[in-house]
Image (cartoon, rainbow, N blue to C red; front, side, top):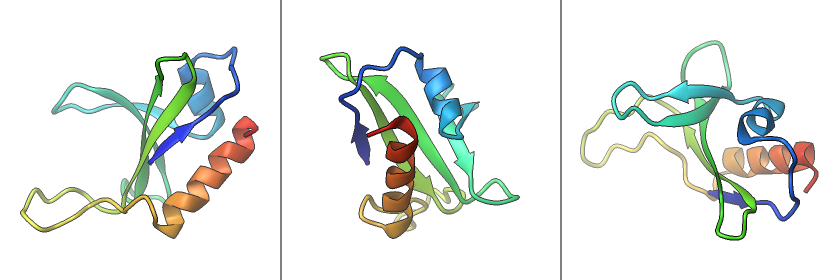
Amino acid sequence: MIIKFTTKFTQNSLNLMRKIGYMPWRDPRSNTNSYIRHLGASYYPRFHAYPKLDQEGNFMIDLHFDWRRPMHKIGIKSTEGEESDVVQKEVTRIKSILGQ
């Protein structure tokens, strides 16, 4: 789910993501940077976020919920859809912290 913000932030994306409880993470397989937030003591379930700026310079977050480790088999999903209650509650939490 894409969360778009119209407020111009003075902090960089690292500080904004830490403010909402996410920590930096580098995927060892694809070597890409993102941010994660665990929901319990184990590695999964977790939220996975990719912050970026849109063409107008507005801050946006591409948010996913990984409820278990990917199995890489056809027909087995490891992420929740955008409509799920868990994702919607996290969007509400993020917007309340960042003032949207």
